[in-house]
Image (cartoon, rainbow, N blue to C red; front, side):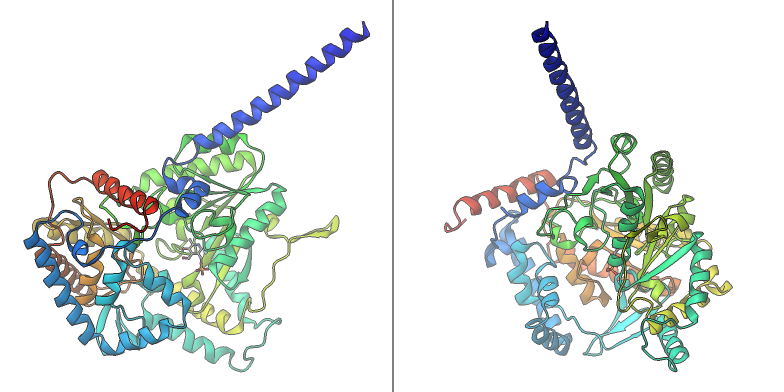
Length: 558
Ligand SMILES: Cc1ncc(COP(=O)(O)O)c(C=O)c1O
């Protein structure tokens, strides 16, 4: 009898264990289903695979005909490169000289210099088309290099420049004068901070504010608060979304350590909503609304422009519907919804992405432009979520400090920014903002199509991506033709054009003329020669073959 009871108990325990493992397995399976199919959706795998990619590059001949172009096209390209190279080396001589010297000791310059184009072309490009990293002045919508060349600025200073550089010169200068008497005293606040918090509360519609030194730090603090208050471990970020360079939000390539408490899930996906509804370990969901322009794909730098598969299309209604559903599920499950508006804040609408999409977040991070031109990160949130200690557990705190937080000069530039921002003149800039920028994008796209050029732009308001309409291996060359026409691009090249809102129609038309001229020149130089049998897939397959060959037989000439 006793034996039978013991056996039953063992079977019972076994069945329970089996049920638990089945449940765990089921949950894991659901998590896998909620990942985006792309490599970017599988952060760990991407990191592992990245370690296997061998370096190799094209020799001079192959540089010009790696797509199988005939000899006359290769010669055309060769002459095009020689002409461009001559132009760069004479027109940008002083700027290039400074940059080359600086790159020997500034590691950031070495990195950006190495990742402007796919690595196979890097050596030739760097030898012939060196890029200057120095500027001496900004004015209106232009910047001037050390040789006195003026460029239309399409870098937007990583998104900081929303209202034009003169605006920020003013905020910094007036701000500095207002706190001069206190100077750089830290720890105690300058009274201006009180007005700043009042204005940020008005803009965000949230209860409390904390100041940090960068967008990355603001995101770190928002996630830390979410984990503290929910007592859950994991953050959810969406495939492709950038949230700064803190390890937990950069679980894939770029971070030497795996992020163990991050789920990278597919955006705009039912499976993701199911995971959020059913798992118990999710503290927060991070949304970077910029992803509306290319959900589930990273902001694509030109260094990954190996073919023409880069695509972008912003559908505001679709993305809004997604955010609303996300909001509902987060509310149902007490998951903290964080809008990371470090990049898009103040760009889309006066009340930021929350207003633009009509969705309220629990925590919002701001950065970049809100510092009035100086370094900043801001977290705003519901009162209960912003609290960093527990009244009933004095030793259980959520620590966040920083030497330079709320620096008087930053607070003063921010104050000037917020005051200006809330004036009717600046608010008027947002009237018809999308219509203006959509109209400009359409106008440029029509011109490009009419000229038979294989290039189109996609946009989310004044944030643009250049896309390529015919399979090609050489699209990354366009950035060099654009610079030659006097358009300043950031190191990601044509992946991101960021316009400031002070671009007039005349300024824009000048940019469009130069854009079309650059694109035509590149076409005339033969870079878009096209074999009708080539597809983006066949290009990718050919590159994969090259990589495998170089991995297996590194010493052999391929
Ligand atoms: C959405 C988003 N979050 C966070 C960051 C990081 O901000 P920072 O570069 O100030 O650390 C960025 C920077 O580009 C960003 O775009």
